[in-house]
Length: 567
Image (cartoon, rainbow, N blue to C red):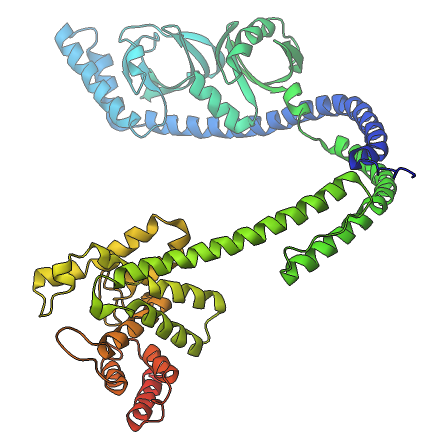
């Protein structure tokens, strides 16, 4: 007998087509992209730095003009001039105590002027460049009597825009003369510390990493800490205003933002970092490659799809028909196209058979457990025997009148069976008391919905029934328990069980009274419709009970229901 030939594996068939194609495409793409991106990135980074430098120069020039205008306005303050002029006039003839008081007056006036200025320090110096008063966050750095050392900058008369060094710190300074009667009696400096915060401000303006080198030393930078020292060394050899340099293992493009005195401000960008971002030129090249790859891949994919989709499609259609018909035990026939598909078909058939059996067993256990719980509860009191079963039957009848979906009917059926399960926790002497309950006893009875919900939460498959158990004593007027919900805030299924429960309680015999008639029960329910019971549920119950809907009282009640619904 001839041995049947086994079909090849899907993996083998797929790899025979896709691997050579993908490998060829990837190799071509990598070669072209690497060659293109290297040059594109370098040119793009340098152009970005140049554009940033031009924008920054314009912004910085405008900011400095505004700052000089502001400083010049402050220097014209008459009170400050008067205090400084008095000091200069009395400087040679007054005793040290008087001079100290005069300097204190100058300092107070400076504090008033410097308060609204966003600067690190404001300083007044005399014509010899000795500090007379200082103010601001770093004003204490400038000691009275200390002589200012300039790091260079531009001067116009006694005005100054440049760099000042003091106490191992470097400041960007703008200064204007303080003039009285055409005589310069001092200068007002507004200073900004060239620190990391200033470097971050430059970064925000230039949108690149920045570094500040003053007198050959790096004073501030937003470069990574590992790059700071290499840049300080490389900056000493920089001669051109822009170019590239290697810092650590990365290549950086740099550009001078501005030169102020002996301080140079740089913008830097990592070429390696930018090379990880797709650029315009590279994207165009990749687009052309992608178009060619798409044509090539389409041809291969079309052939491969013909090999795979036909048997998979047959299997899919069979599975869809099988699951749609719910004929779970039915076994599918193998396709014979590959081992994997045949194994999948066999596994699916076995799985469906197991699921069908497990579903039947679960449903049986589910229903049995619920009925056992309801029976155990009803067995405690001979007067309530069968109560849960009757409430379940009535609730299902109401649900069908309301045309509820079948899955909600099933939740309603079993939830009604369990609605009083919490009474397991109520003592017998209270539950079976023949007479009226005391306030304490009634409070205990009112706890049974909450207790029942707590019991069901321990069993995951009973979760859909918890709202019925917990809320079947809530009322439309909000006077129910345990949560005093109102109107439509109460779930529909809980409203149905509330009415069915009340109807069975009225028509069933108790130790202290005989059972009432169905007509009496319906009349009582209608009387309390809208307050204790939902009117539409009472109407549905009336329609569900045979032989009652044609009685006069019930016809009047139905009219009343229409009025309530249409109100």
